[in-house]
Figure 1: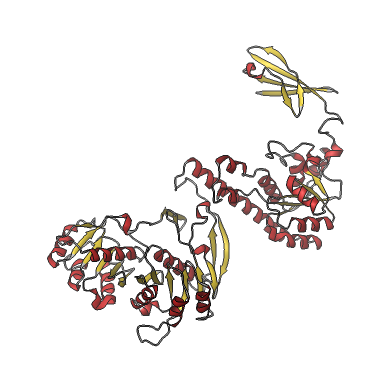
Figure 2: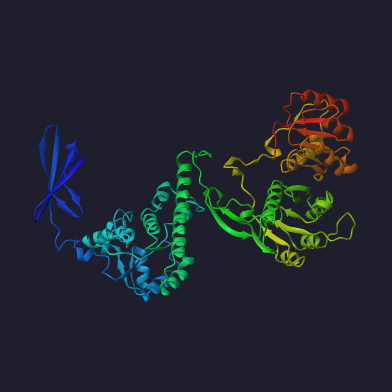
Length: 599
């Protein structure tokens, strides 16, 4: 459609070229005015001319430079438009007391008036009503011109004067609650999600942030006191303005990333989009990183996919010193491991490796057995439980002596569990002033796992497979007994949480020994056998990957040590050697066809 206009003193003609006049044969209502139309033929096209009556003082909307002027020279103006109205009265009254004229929209204007703040409504400046169910309120030159105009550019000021537009000095805006809407417990209809995408708000925020030299933009209620103090002091601190501008752009960027993530899931849903934004929010500054010379901080992932999905990042700390960089890594490893088990279980972790794991109906016994697996490593480690910690368990944690000497009280950096009784918390708090006590929710399956490498990120599905999801195929002559199969499944669940190359030896739902992180599988095996000691006889062994060699190598050494059953993925070109070796020693061999590398 081509549009042109002509005018006289009293009438304006709007002409449009349309290819299909039949669809426009009826009168149309423009801005509440009904007009008749005249068709003018031109070649194969048709012109439709609409005489538009000039607006007068009796029309619903009066166009007047004087009326539409945002402010007179010297007037200070603040624009406030908020979805989250927390502390609105505080900032509104504060700005008014400082001599600012308050311009506002819809519900914000009503709330300000109720708080005793005099308000100029946006419609009075734009001379145009809010329309399209609120989609269009502030998208108007009288608003954006007043925000974007540079005060140090003469032609900008002259343009404002010509069009009767005044300047804004402060813009206080936050956005429709899109994030909360699309993550609500009951879910949300697609159209409701769409209508909660803010358009005018981000436009005003971005405009004010771009022109931060002249306009103060505030998107966070926590910044209201600092804003008012800044204005009271008549300061000209560009760093303060720049910080607010950065915060504004970051606010909009996080908002847009949520919209983008949601729309991607609605349209395609693939876990690996062509472009990925991960919104991170600073939770705390840390004393240092892995080592004292490294600065560090901890961020919470605000992606929609992480809402209410559990994990250490959202754990509640009930007691103890602030968490460190290494504390977060170790607590995460312990929690991820213990949550895999269905029966009451205790996991002890040191340097992200589980060094003790035990499942028992009696959680106190499970705790003692988990520590006994490697008491030297357990000292100073992290202890995690998948059941509530009550007074009895808390007392056991507080008073338990090391199995190495029967005297040294066990020391831990962190205790983590899904919940605590009141007395349980009270007892644990008495163990140490520094003991960190965390309450966490179980990680949900199906998360996206991200890991940084130089200049990029690796993304993959989380490793959620458990023994209940796979089949343990018997490939040896000897089949395992039921108890041996259960031991193999337990060892297999443990080994997926041990750093590769990983070997775990277990019996009766208890880890006896593990070898981790060795460059070759034989060394990991020897470490695990040494830790298991005499209990290795008849135990189950799990390997996170296949054995590349069998004779005079890891498989034969395991068989000679007395291992009763071996579980491994299989897939080696020498699998038959492993089968023959196990058959020679009367050991059951199970192939899972699933590898559990952990780097």
